[in-house]
Length: 185
Image (cartoon, rainbow, N blue to C red; front, side, top):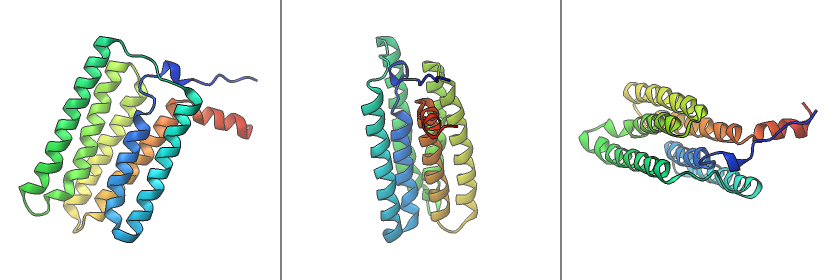
């Protein structure tokens, strides 16, 4: 039985989840401290680089976005980026203990941006991933407000969000089906 593998030529922004997952992994590894956190960060960056190069090498370039859609996507990216900068700078300045909310609120912002992006691109998988990131950010915010340290919300939201994003990116690109076919299941 032959299986069709979806190529990146029909997928808009194929490396999006991979790169966002790498950023989430870096944010999550900051909660582990200097020694272990550096090793965790290096492992995540290595995996991100490998996934990125694998997608680029094996599946070629992505689908071209027309001028109007590309402008809307860039506008959404700028809005999400500005909100992330405001959250990243503003929350720690509010007062003692509010800086722990930076990563969970950032996950909520990225999740909301992915939900908006899913309507622009017509990719339903981005809606599911965005919803999971919003829920993960809300759980991380509760953990940040109820705990005494930043390690738990940073680790849970950052590492958890990275794993969700990486799995969604690999799934959306059809790499899971190809791996299943190689294994023989």
